[in-house]
Length: 110
Length: 123
Image (tube, rainbow over all chains, first blue to last red; front, side, top):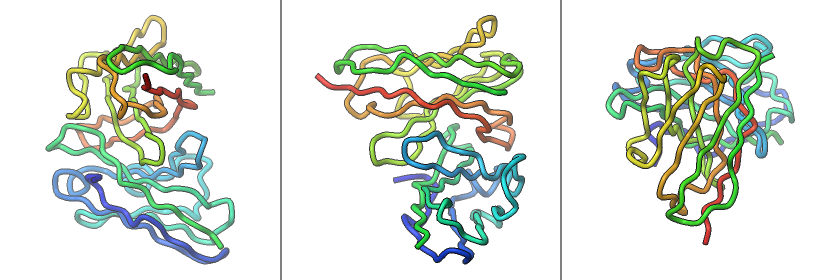
């Protein structure tokens, strides 16, 4: 079981908006910044969001991040077929003194 | 441009040891913390270990403590992960990644990742 909880799968149509949730506790999300990654099978993870809501250069503003209390959310607008991937949230956990990730959400764009 | 290239993976027998390497280029290696993250077949991402920019601070996934050792050679721009007493559950793709933030101080993320090296533990 992952320390951070994400829905296992989501689906949406091209052009629509989707939100992916990530739930944790006070020892992780509640007191630390959250990051989000896109993972296509066979390729390395790609950073989408860091420090809750910051986008690295080159990441389109269709991707956004937010945090409230012990939960975080990744939003993707204007869905494209190329957005089909697994999405992971991550943060630091002070109780474990370890880097922790959510279990991942498989996004299908149909 | 930032490049991270892992090596050292392969097939190894249970109980044996393996050392993974990650060659870094395109940035000042000694200024950044570095992470190892793995992904087992059909599983999610798992943070394995983190080392500070100067190698003085190290963090490990609790279940791996004692068998995994992270280290770095800043003179050679290289990150290492030593794995002892290999187990079947260590089978995974191991990624090295650059960590710009200070994890224990609040900001913990990886901005650049290598392509990964596959470790398969099998007799």
